Length: 225
Image (tube, rainbow, N blue to C red):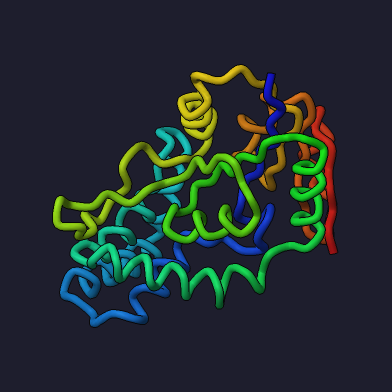
């Protein structure tokens, strides 16, 4: 039976939320389109009127993010090779300098103990695959971009957003033909509780300060400085 250690990515292995900034990074390196301008206006309007809060509540209930959907739609029509090239630049310039050393050390320790490593993240495949290649990660469960037959981005992901309970169902699909036990799981927020709960031991990752909600769980807390 395989032993598996699960890791969220954002605020767990990397010290910031990586999905939306990747969209911004791509937009900075391509010519603006009318679609980008219209969606940017809409998102600004939602923020000014407070509709974004309403959408967040709906997203928690139905396990999807309207904000993410709209942001990705801004990138519709960009060639896959362009996105992959920009993902490499994003990974090197933005992700790698912000990896959390304490957590990278824990990932390596889990690997050395004989556990296979799975990243289960609501972020995006184009740059997370580069992290996985760098750190010998065995499984990547995340949001993959949908491309046309001509390798043009369709502005959306292939499956349901890999958030909340979807993380568990997506992971189980990937591991469905394997005999395994989840020995440990690492995540930073309450929304990671589904993947933390399926492990023999869940760990909540906190930056500088204790998170009081952890006290009501069986999870342990790792506070990094």
